[in-house]
Length: 435
Image (cartoon, rainbow, N blue to C red; front, side, top):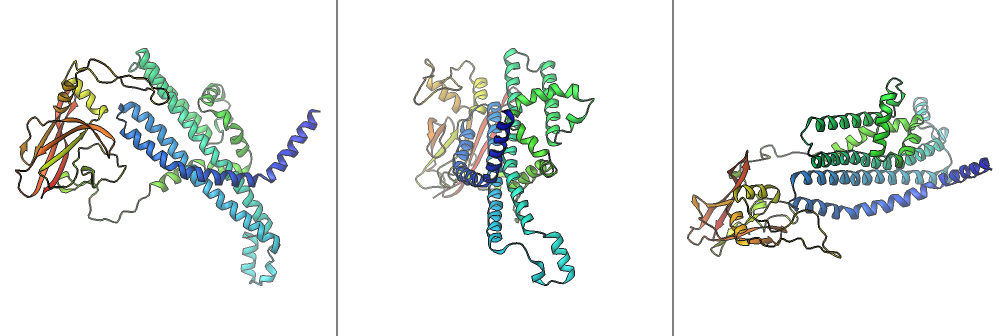
């Protein structure tokens, strides 16, 4: 009874394999359509993350997760596009085969040298169709294997993040045990990664097996190996699949390098010219590209015609909060920070009892504003949410009617915490022209 059931399953899978190309094309086309539509929200997510103002450590962790997600998006789009191209070539070859049969080299009447070369390297048209079928099927499986490989990398990074939070909660971060644990995790992850790329070479070394087996089991759980392990071993159990498996890392490297290529033709235009020699569009609201992420102060335009100059200085929590704590010790915060719920379920986390004027005064004291060689004493700052940048910060309006017509320089300096002391650093160097 069990043999009959196994036989029926094999027959059903064989029939399904013959028709799998239809499912592959449907899934590839639908996935490409979705991936193209996802690009906008994925880009917006990156912009929102950069504008969030969260702590540097959290920003790095979420940025890494977004980077892995973006890499998965790019690899899926490229691979599925190549798969559709090869499937199209395969279908066109089958269509031609139905009307033209196999290649008749005798009717072509080539010279013996060309005839021998072409028969040896082109061969049967049926074998060509078979090779295309094999390439398409393995390429489709190869695509999802890369996707799960990125998921495995995300699992290892998540392990590092969880261990960091655990040791910080236990108060052991910075202790020797913390460093030893991270080294062991890193070494085990590298062994598992080498074994994966070498198509299981470490599992063939007998003396290493007793030591590597628990490492393999542990990282199999961390990397969600149950999802892709059958696909991986079924791919590498034959010569052609092993050849594809060895191309895994070089293929990813080629994609990364290819997406990073840039042709430089400006021989005399410096990449990062000094501040006094460049006119940055980041500093002007009417020149900045829509959706650009900038952290620098800005003014509405390069040209000032009404005698008043508006200056917006963004509030950067990751940098400014420490400066405020040092500059104004004991100042009550206005909000609880961290995750909250807002929408269908809303939890109000605002604090009571804080002094708005004290916060505004303290934040304003972090900045100095100069026009040419003159310092504006005690500028009147107000809280402001910039409508274009969707960023919170301070806004000040200066009377510059007394300035002569022509070019002037607005310079903003900000206090930054350096080695337990606050120092003034240049935050912006903004030329403007008074009409």
